Image (cartoon, rainbow, N blue to C red):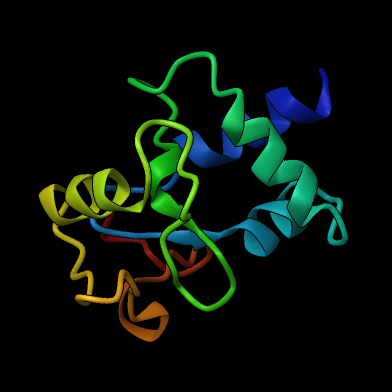
Length: 107
């Protein structure tokens, strides 16, 4: 299984209404220093309908200015439709919406 496949498997697990960071995904993939590679993998997402890359943000909770599927405005719209609050400056409160795969048992 390639690194990209592992990234896609982890991102598929992010539940509706939650977000993760590139670094968090890298750690969950077993490569804690590979956050840029996670971003690169998501830029080439082969199945955006089933791999919700819009749920992945930078370490500050910011939407990606070059979001692969239409820019930060599109990413913010998708997140809002998912139940995630996005500020006017395209920031998500990670304390409130960050996915914790080890304690989000209700998802």
